[in-house]
Image 1 (cartoon, rainbow, N blue to C red):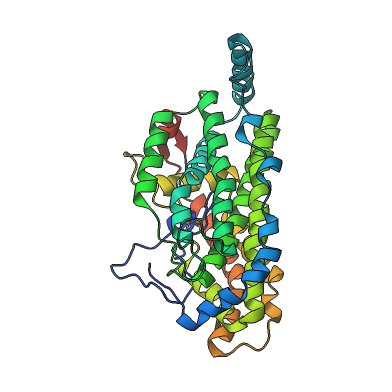
Image 2 (cartoon, rainbow, N blue to C red; image 1 turned 180 degrees about the vertical axis):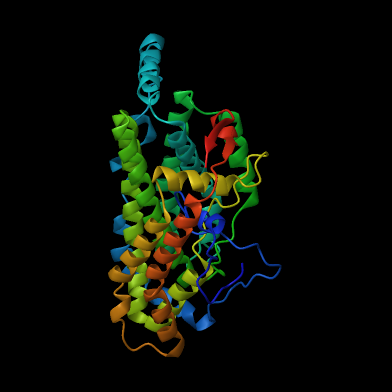
Length: 376
């Protein structure tokens, strides 16, 4: 992962379209470098997380929902325990509701689902973070308890979206399943460096992005006449909002106990770019699948560059970064960089939009929707 110290993308229509990221996502990733930095957190910082275990137990774990009070996917899909004809009536009703949804919407919803289905990768990466990983698989550490329970809550999202899409008949499940297979096998490199400072900055941003994205898919489903799908996406968005609050609270605490270290971590992740977990998605046919999918998400209004800037500004405000005092050299430089980044992103987007308006539209076929062509 290349670390850039300037605005981390070039001012061209094509590269800016990489910013038009869908769920669990934000900016495009640079080509992987041969040497990756790992275990960048100084050993003495491990004590920071040990000292916060009591706080995490009291303030973070209660943000999880008990299993018995959590929604489950079966709430939103046809009931297979019903007599066959009643079950089929529910399936027909689902298909009737979804028939007015545009292909572009289904394309983005598939991308959301595929991203959620790569959950094994995300849990694996969180368990690589020094000082907070699950050392034995059942560790009682509050950091490990959180990661396992967070994964359990997240696991329902892909299951529910996959079932709904399968029953809709609007998508090619074989190509979708191949994409999931490729994606989990490919993994991801979010640039954490096994460093929980970086990891929790990333997850704060990404969970906020997912909340925004699923909220927008809920709105569009409601507008297009599928209130059940709207509730599906809305329920997922609510989970993501709760997870965002937890991760953001962790960063807030790090800013309190180690302001310079936390501020440098925020600056480092924003310089690297917050990469979409599914940026390596591939269906076996389109080597630029992620780029094309991201363009559709931007055009539909599910997730845009302006959303990225909005999230950055939201977190700057929540973490009160502009008012953070007592920072040492590197921390002050990171503060200045991060607090001035959002306006630069918006200006870059305006220039790219102007260039894009002069470009000739092109058609791209997507295997997920039976090779239908969408104009980008």
